[in-house]
Amino acid sequence: GMAALAARAAAASGRRATGAAPASHLRGRAYSVSAQSLAYCVSQVQTFDRERYVCNLFLPPPARAPVFAVHALNVELARVRDNATEGTIRRMRLQWWRDAIDSAARGRPLPNPVVEGVAHALALRPLIRPWLDRLVAKREEDLDIELQPPDRAWLRTYADGTAGGLLHCALELVGDESDAAHEAAARLGRALGVANALRGTPVHASQGYVFLPRDVTDEHEVRIRDVLTRGRAAGLPEAVASLAQDAMEDLQWADAAVHQLGSPSVRRALAPAAIAGTALHALGRAGYDVFDSRCRDTQQRVLVSLAARQIFGLKSTTPIPTATAPQSGPKGA
Image (cartoon, rainbow, N blue to C red; front, top):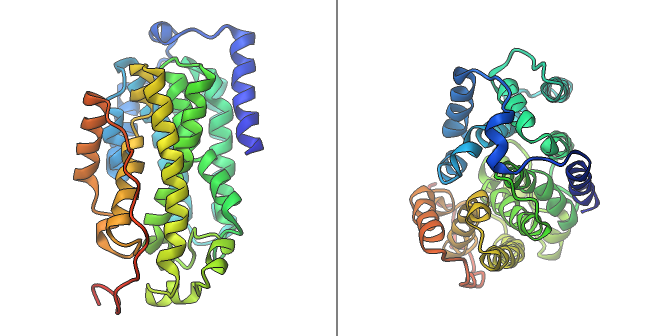
């Protein structure tokens, strides 16, 4: 999307203007943040985003603390919608986080462990600021969804700014500035964001909305009210399969690019490819029934995939199966 290109351009121009230091120099530029604040950031990611927590353990040691801080920020932003029901309160909380990021960028963070962790990350790599700002903006767009987003383009752009933005930050924090690595991050972020949106459907539906785009559900004649009230709808597996296939193509493109780059630091920064691959294959095994528990019980498979990718350099090359008709009757009823 254009906003993603703008964020990358802002980061690139910042590199040229500041001559940003490579990863080997990160230790000397650290903001003085307490071990307690950083431990809190790690704890939040471990509790609320277990898969990214495991991926971060593969990062080069100097990059772990700042990446955990960025991911803790993502946790806080994602929980705004869950922790407040009133739209005005949600937007006020997001504005607080906007101001908090600004305070962190100025080196005078508000007294909050996540904000202090973000100040640490920004001191190491100021160029991640556009991605953090965009992360807040995308979470605000999330609040505008009353029933479902309008189209595939919205979902892709949302994934670019959320899952993709986190990957761009990780690349910056391991010191990789190449356009090829950031293009791989963009494609992987799109795949991961869509995969997470699909497997999160049961939770979203319980809150009265879904991330299934209207143009896709219209194409497959899916009644969203049935999804929300019954957990089943004619055409739903086919709609999910269509989105999952696009995501798998993005993932395979990103995997090939990372393999061609041959950089251990890039492979570690983009370790969440294991999450995307595992989630998409789980959807396929479940016949694209997003309400099947197999779509969410994936932590052990993520660990196996991480080991295969990080130790042996394997990648997702197996196409996911074609959609199958759902079984009659809701599971677990």
